[in-house]
Image (cartoon, rainbow over all chains, first blue to last red; front, top):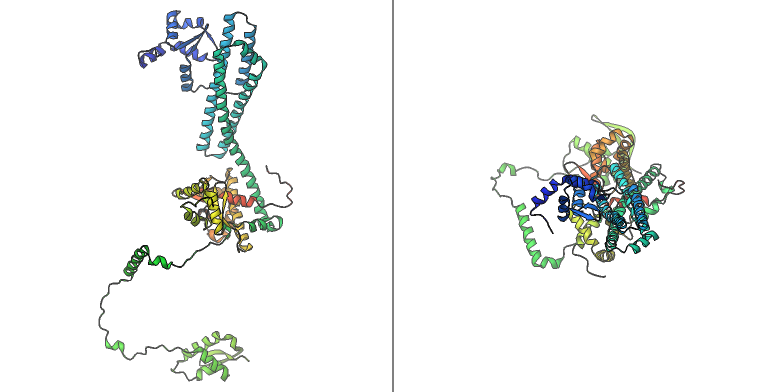
Length: 398
Length: 197
């Protein structure tokens, strides 16, 4: 039951008794005797009993503890998590063994109970510590995966977390082993304590949760470390392949051709293009009709040019000019040259064209024929001269 | 067939038949959706059967899908040319990875300007960057532009994503593993120091 009038009341009580709370918090791993606390309350015993009544302190026999909830709150808030390492694990097992031994040797019930309390407290804290370490570890690992961009830092941090994970694994192993020892089994049987059984059950549950979480974390870290190894393997292999390729030895010294012959992925193929004719049935449908309308509208729009009437064409433009452009039939010329024989330029010069050609036009025609029917002519090395032009003698090929 | 192909089948076909990859970590929501559709329940088997009937094999990689065809009339010389190009590209990015001591594979983020900066102080990288000039796709006298062309080419081939156009940042996608796997599957004969690491 909440023994205070308000939160304000609770906080001011905590503040008033801050000395004793601070002391108990710092000694939370050991047991503190009731008598040792009296000096913090100026030996006014009623203050101490009132704190116990208000459930801020909890009394076990002759020892006093902070309420677990307050302890949890303070630990969480100050982030003072017991780090699980080799010392933690070996220390815990050692203390447990010591206390069990003392419990067995002690014959006075009062004293015996005290050792039992110590054992309960030792075990009770383990589950909490383990879970908290696992939670922090999980958080850190996820954090590194999400935020750490520098690869080498990421690698180092994950290796560090991997060590922490090993420590946790180690602790769980040792607790398991310890619980299977005959000393422990004997102790449980002899103690016959309900609360102890509850604590053990809870620890078992905590360990199962911790194990599940650890497996997950391990998987994550291992995946990452494996990937690094894999990457470095790939890296080395690519280097070797590249070297062989540059030495032009790749096909010879490896199964390269075999590999690429077997790989039929589209990456290795020319792009496939599909072209299909229009479906005539579709063109008849309503949908197509709308599309056709749209297209015809677009087409009209693009062709639709504002028509302006142009002025009257004056007569002088319509008269006199020869509309046809005269084009020589080179084929016909060639045939008649081949049958006539002689020198090509001479032939062109004296040919009776339908239209009178200028000297320049005749030269052009000569070049045109010479290049177009090179294979049918034989071009000699002797040159002839007409007007101011020197030309090679060209005769039909024999 | 165990069921009907999903309605996105034609979208899937359209991408894959262009020789593109559908990667789980693509920056495009559309591609990511298609990936999830293929992954969904029995869809992979259904689609595989379906595409097989029209001559395409839906291939599954770790985190990506692509098409292959049973028989092709692609001549080996063409394939050799393409494979050579992939080897050169992989080797180039590998050299960069070594220069910055970070892996260059799925998830890696880089920008051409950073590679260019690195190439100024790393002669191996510079040499390889220079050699890329021989490929028509990346042919330019300016080295930085060459890396940009290369990166954009890889985006076009769906191995990279352009994640930030302003800072010119690219991300390596799952499909890049296809290239790595391809090269790794080439076994070198008579290798004495086969042991990695």
